[in-house]
Length: 71
Image (cartoon, rainbow, N blue to C red; front, side, top):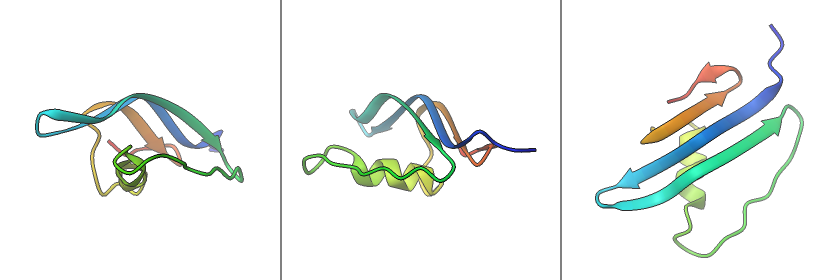
């Protein structure tokens, strides 16, 4: 089975305590594609990467990495 996207996020959000760190994130990255993440301190870059690495589970939405459910 050939997976079209390496990473696919649909309406992903992460809540830590009473604060939303990420909300309503939609992202599709194809195999072989490169991206860069830019943002201010506290904007959720590290949390996003931790979710992609399956170290942190999303609070809402669907996340797939290489066709596997990472949520």
